[in-house]
Amino acid sequence: MHQVGGAATSSSSSRARRIARRTRDSCAAVLANTLCSFLLGVLLVAGVVLFVLWLGLRPHRPRFHIASFSVAGGLDPDSSPAGASLAFNVTDRNPNRHIGIYYDAVHASVHFYDALVASGPAFAAGWYQPNKTTTSITGLLDVLGPTTTDASWPSFSAAVRAGRVPLRLQLTTAIRFRVTNALHSGRQRMHVSCDLLVGVDGHLLPDSVGAACDRYF
Image 1 (cartoon, helix red, strand yellow):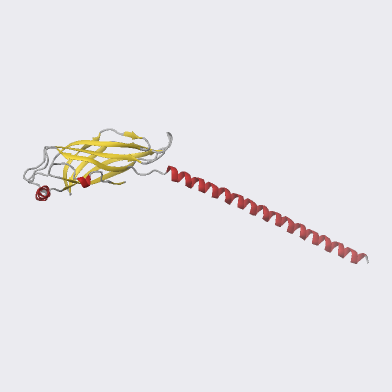
Image 2 (tube, rainbow, N blue to C red):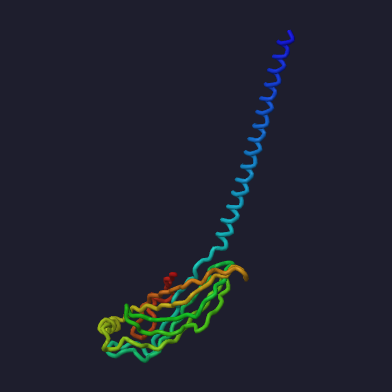
């Protein structure tokens, strides 16, 4: 009788230990799952917040449009424009709500296809453009060609006779985005290319006024 009672007590004790171990394992699993769920929730919320901040603060490229362009004295199909002066005005819009832009000096050049027409500085010094503002980039350049002896002269003369001279104004600079006083982006080289049409009078044709310019880094 004593042996039977001892076996029953041992079996009950073993069963109790198993139940206790399963209970501890179950509690540990619940705790681990709860902790994992909490961490995943924190990461999800942090990801959403960072995504919203990125959407609001990521820099947008400035936008450029050709406002005016003129060659003093107009164009003559029988004589080179070399020696005349050339003026242009390009509007530069910073579309960012919270980000300003630092510009280096701007260099300008004008081309008739691959032939250089004029070249020189537009802005000799750098400047800062606040958020949501528009700046006019103006320049006055000396016309260098094409001359009547250049390979491009026949095409240029024919375009003047037709009253539609295709030119390309290029601006080259470097920019940095300013998020805060202490947070700036790295300097990026930027090129702006404005395709335009000029008439015999040396001024922009109507369909080129306000035309958007391409920009690339």
